[in-house]
Image 1: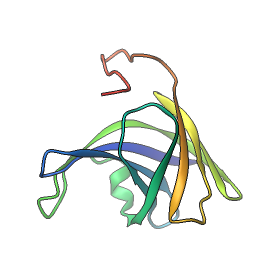
Image 2: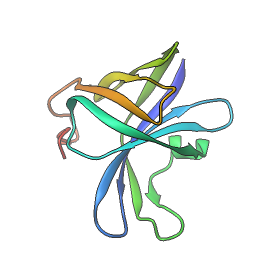
Image 3: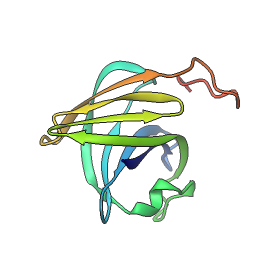
Length: 121
């Protein structure tokens, strides 16, 4: 199994979006979306591959592009055109991998974690 991470990307303009990164051999397959977590079904856009370092990184993003906070992490499997992932806070799927706009389904594992994080924050 490969690793995945869900990052909350706070931009320099004080807006935020969610980045889903999926470990591949040399880089992370990356998707971005806006909205609140969790969600039954949402569209996300494909971004250029990100460095593997983002699987472990939290903090400022170079080029004054804000900062990232790790919200969840875990493992995934890729079967055909779909990714199925399981984290400590969320689990779900990414469908239609061959498209630039994918469908992500995300379900909360727990309504609130031990550190007080509410999935919709």
